[in-house]
Image (cartoon, rainbow, N blue to C red; front, side, top):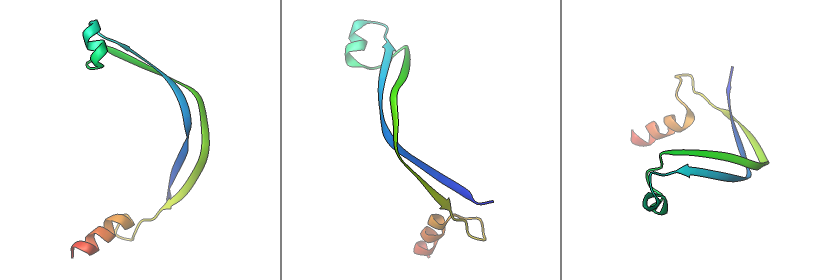
Amino acid sequence: MNKIIKTSEGNTDFVLKEEYQDEDKAIEGKEPIASDIELQNLKIENIKYKLKEVLSDGKARSEAAKTREET
């Protein structure tokens, strides 16, 4: 059976909550102790399906093209 690549494009809003050891690290935005993200208003705008072509030797077309360019 052929493999299919599904690409979804869209927009979303999110809320990111991060916990820091102290105020200085929070201001820098580095080394959070914990983080949690909540997605809101997810809207899919476009979905594309593409057949992932495989050659008889099992390599994907992009790999085969790269091999041809190198030789």
